[in-house]
Length: 209
Length: 209
DNA sequence: CTCTGTGAAAGGTTTCACAGCC
DNA sequence: GGCTGTGAAACCTTTCACAGAG
Image (cartoon, rainbow over all chains, first blue to last red; front, top):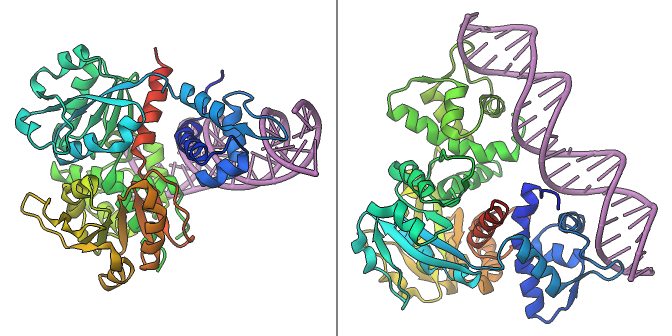
C-alpha cells in the first residue's frame, strides 16, 4: 500500500466514528454521500480517501459498514489496545484521564507522572491510576511499555520532559503544552494548542463585524 | 488587506507566542530565521506569512519584536478581551476554566452552563465562575454578550446545544464533543477531537515498527 | 553585505467528471 | 441506473531564489 496523505489520515478517525454511528442505527451499507454528510465533507473526498486504502466499496451499492470500519481500524493500528501515560498530572491531566472517549477507543492509561506524586488523591469517580514520581520517568516508561504520552506539564518544563519521554522509548506525544517541541524525527508529536485555537476564533470574529 | 490563507492564520498565534518569549529574554529585534526556529518552521514560511500582514520588517535587519507582536495581536483581534462561556460543565469543562493559558491571553470566562447547575461546588483554586442552568442558555448568552463558547457536553447533546449556542448570537465555537457540528455558515467551529488525535498517533506507531 | 518581500516553481489537496463495474 | 474508483483540472500551500532596500 502506498503512503496516505496526511489529511486523509486525519479524516479516517472521523469516518470510523460515523460508521459506528451508522451501525448503531442498524445500517449495513452506506454510500460515499452518506458518510460525507455525517463527516461534514463531500462524497468525492470520501471516495478519494477510502480509495487509498484499497477497493473497499461495491459499485452501484456502496460500502459495507462493518467491514469498512474494521478496515479503517486496522489501518489506524487499533486492532490492539495502546498503552498511554500522562506526564504532568495537574488539572488538565486529571480531566483527560477521566475523559470517556479514550478507553472507549482502546487506549489504556497505565500511569501518570508528576513532580508531586501526592496528586493521587484528586481522582474521583471510582477510577484509579498509578501516579508516579517524575524521577524515574525514563525507566518507568520503558518498564510499563508506554507507547503514547499525553504531555500536560507547564510550558517551562515541557521541552525537557519531552526529551525524557523520548528517552523512555515513546514515539508518540500528544502535546498540550504551549511550546513547539524539538525532538528526534522518530517521535511523532501532535500539538493541541488551546490558546491558539481561541485566538484563531478571535481572528474570525474580528473579520465578521 | 487581502484575505489570509487559513494556514497562515493558524500559525500567527504561534509566532505571537515566540515573540513574547523573545521579548522576555530581552530581544528587541528578531529575523525570520530566529522566529522560524522558535516556531518549528522555516524562514521562508515566516516571511511569506508575515508579508500577508504588510511590510513589517526592515531589510538587512529583521523585525521589531514589540511592534510585530502588536501587529499580529491586532490582526487576531486580541486588542480587546473576548467574552467566553463554557457549555457542559463536566470534568473537562472545569479543567478548561482553570487552564492558565486562557486569561493570560485576554479571554474572560463569564459563565458556565450545565443541566445540573449544582456543579458550582467543584471549582477549587480560589477561582469562581457563574454556573447557570442550561434552561435559559440562549437568552443568557445574549445578556452576557458571549462571543466564544467552549462546547464540552456529551456527544449525544452536542449538536442540539450547538444550535442553541448559535441562537444565542455566538459566532465562534471550540468543539470538544466528538461530533461534526452542522451550523449556519456564520458560525465558525474549530474541532478539538482528542480521541481522533490519539488514533492518528496510533496510525503513525503502526507504520514505524 | 544582510535580510526582507515576492514572483515563480514545486508539491500537496480537493474537486470534477466520467469510465467502468454491479 | 447507481455508485465506486480515478485520472485530470483546479486550487491551495510551501519552498526556492533573487531583486531590492537598508
